Image (cartoon, rainbow, N blue to C red):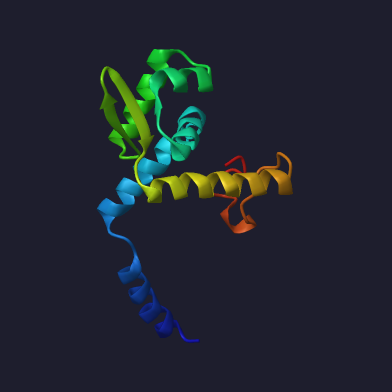
Length: 134
């Protein structure tokens, strides 16, 4: 393969990249899931609808903290809310969000069972840019 072939391939690859706003939105969503409490909430909400009281008991946190996490998840477009009288009932917003949560938890499960507690190491070529602590 010649260097000029790489340039043509690079141009093709650049055209296939997702647009900036799409990447920004995806990054915001993934950032929301990077918090352990929010990921736990999303795991529950991927299975069904729950009000704040049920979620407070499930995650063992104070109501204001759970409400704040739910608000962030709602603003990120990951959860929806509907009213039942005075109760607010939350749910994962769409099948794509449920699949995302399920997939990331399954991938984590495979990693945990495969290497009980080991951290992912970067290849040697990347060692100067980031630490292996991830």
